[in-house]
Length: 275
Length: 309
Image (cartoon, rainbow over all chains, first blue to last red):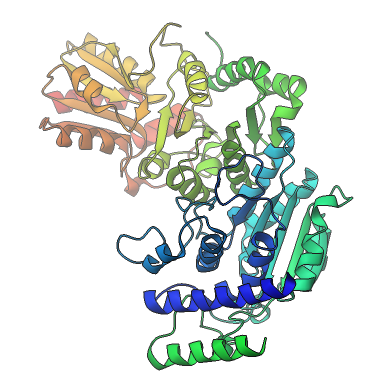
């Protein structure tokens, strides 16, 4: 299963890249860094969900707080069967139902998102209501690391631990890059574990591209013996799979064109072949 | 309901409803009220204090609302609108998540607190976004009725409460679904909202002594219920619009837009705060501030008299 999930993650990356090249837009690198996390959650059955019934009351909620990773979530949802994969041919095109940022009109998508620092607080509200309603579902939310600059993230972090929202799981896609520079050059976000811990969270720091580790850590969240919310800081590479995009600032929010596109596709193909 | 603030009347009603409905939740940004003490004591599981964190307040409320909760988010008006405008825009305007945003201190309600606590731009901002209803409250009967209506609304609403105790204008059985009410009939009308309805009524009384028969229309819902508003004008050929708010894009602008869009081409005298006058560091009570801006009763009388000459 782990092997097939790894392959799936690479297939999804190829789809994302092709989709964004065709649309000439989309946040390719922000999507690439979180593909393994999404595949583990959705296809690795770490979340309870039903593509045939997106509004299933008992589903685990997934709140994508870094809304710019919509190409990744849309592709994963299509692969699960929430809607036909061919619908994504119209990504960011006239008459299509998908845009560069996340919108909740898409089956399986819980929120409209693009303004950072918001999905996390929304997720805390969902988790609190779930506890009030004695619902057993978990609420997962995926944050960008750059998103953690938003003050509202820390308002929510305090709130969630104070209210002992142990049904809330935040995953930080720690890809180290914002738009213009590496986070540690902009305003340092480290030491991230200490910061979250001091806000009252249980913290796991993992390799966000290791399917084995993702499945291992996510597989334990439902039986955690803790009253604290959990944050998984997933170290990732922004642009993972497309070598010329990795470790490069100012590759945010763009899709490669012309020769760059050919090069990117070749790089991804080569990486897939030896993975 | 004399001698009760709009705020206490509002929360008393919410308390009565919440006793029998565990899905009614108050999210407070460290904001209390005598009427809320009862709520906190008797219904602690339905009272969430997020601390002085309005952005998180709107987000948590919106998340809860999607899980079936009826949430009231409460703080001083500028902080629960401006401070978290982006959150309101995405969650409640864009996503249409129905919560009730309760802001206390409309206009110069926090009279001695200085300009950070004055709320004189909110109508402009909130009415610029789709799927949001402004309930601009003029008395405590209305605030209780709006509390009850808020529990059934399909869209988000912003309840703009005055801080001070104001005289009662309405009977208990008033139908507040109309959006406007004619409180006094006249040959000409002053359209006002919130606490300025009371200034309009006082001014109309004084103008009456001068031989001018002036009516008063309370416009308590924005966007304005156009048909009802035009009908309330009764074919008058001049109108005065009054607000304790900057004139730019505010209530009186909404009045002019309504007239224009409905082909009612009558002269309108707008009375409110000009941007040139800026923010207010005057102290000594609300009337001193109103005099400073020329929106107190006597200034209104003077301006209306000149306009109708």
